[in-house]
Image 1: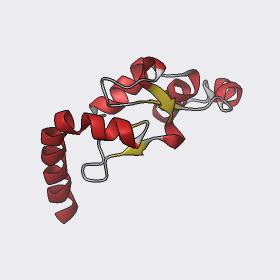
Image 2 (image 1 turned 30 degrees about the vertical axis):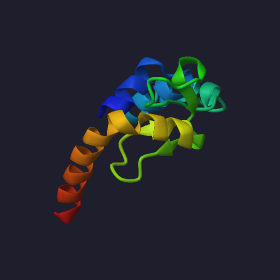
Image 3 (image 1 turned 90 degrees about the vertical axis):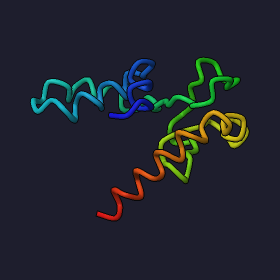
Amino acid sequence: LHLQKLMELLIADDHTLVSFFRKRITCSCLDKKHKEVKSIKKMGFCNNDNCPLPGRKVERSKMLYCTRCRYAHYCSRDCQEAAWSEHREICKEKAERNAKFEQR
């Protein structure tokens, strides 16, 4: 798991948590709970430290991600641009690592 996913688990809604553990636990003990929570929208975490949204949470299906490194996720283009100065170095490292991995 990378940092973005770990951060999402820390602030996760019930749907995200149940889905996460249901994929990793082989018994059927979470099936009933999954039926209860599957209508809850999954929430994500905006990478911009100054995001104006409460708790920097946004519905995951509406999030944007950095197309260069595919690591950072944002609630809007404005947040992505605002965070670029901090994200630039990490982005370069992640993009290079992704490129090496894809060449294999």
